[in-house]
Image (cartoon, rainbow over all chains, first blue to last red; front, side):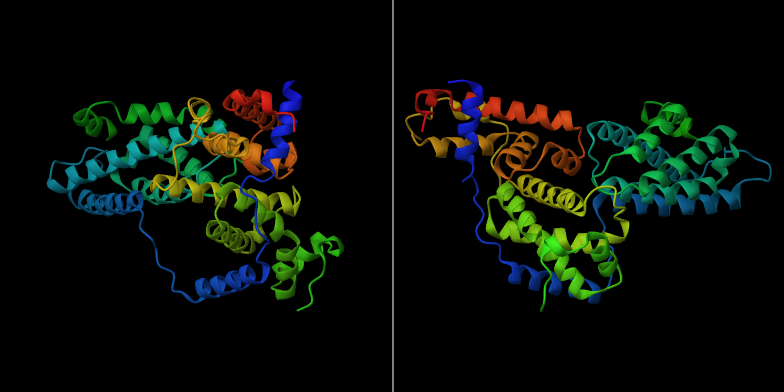
Length: 204
Length: 187
């Protein structure tokens, strides 16, 4: 028997695979109407996923660090504020931010190649975009190299935040091309060198 | 409630009415597409409750996001994209919770079970279940539910050639899994 005939037989036999019952149209419609009404009526509660909790925590530390940096840094000093507990926390948070951004962009680029994108990318990008803007307003942005990187990250993250869930098309191609052309990942890796101690120093 | 049959509904007008908040238009859109959405969810999930959940979520998302529908593809294709995303993501969540059997075991299904499961259909269904997600999805959509490769490619966001290649590979895995039934293929 040829493969074609076997495939034909397979198709015939497979028709009963998970054979659906009659569609419960009215019941489903009632459920849809009720659920939509429930969601409209329910107060919007922000569900904090683990990555979002970490992101908010990092952002909070970053805000604290920025405030301390502004208070303690002399006028004209570049991105090397004096040592203090706040500055250390700021550096840790900034390094976390750069590391997470690097991980997000690397994953995004890899998934874009497969043609499917997880819905979490947009959410994570929005989260990191907030932190990016905080960074741009921090003493770290006085470093021209880091400032340029943050500006590129702002654009890329804003684009990723707008990508519809599950879809990878021309928009995604343009984003990945932008990442490649601006060497964003390479610059991120340079800003966050390997090794825990070096990562903090190299970042800022 | 009067519901216009799908064939008489002008899609663009229907979409415009839904966007304007017309509840009858929402129902007409639902009626036009619910059968295929539910069937696809059921075929992939193999469970009535899950199929209902996935169908419900598909239409809720569709109504929420209809403003973002640009009309580049048919509305039905756009809905199937949402349906496959909702269903596959839902099944992945279940799998993560350990409620599904491990996937991609088609070859293992072939070995040793001949005496224990003599029924060809039973073995075929087990082999389909054991396909990896991408092969099983394409096989079910094309060979079981009759979607075209173009529809599958759009719904899964892959190239048409990828859909064809995955179907070919899925069929090969099923043939391999059922090789010891070779003498019983002729009905």
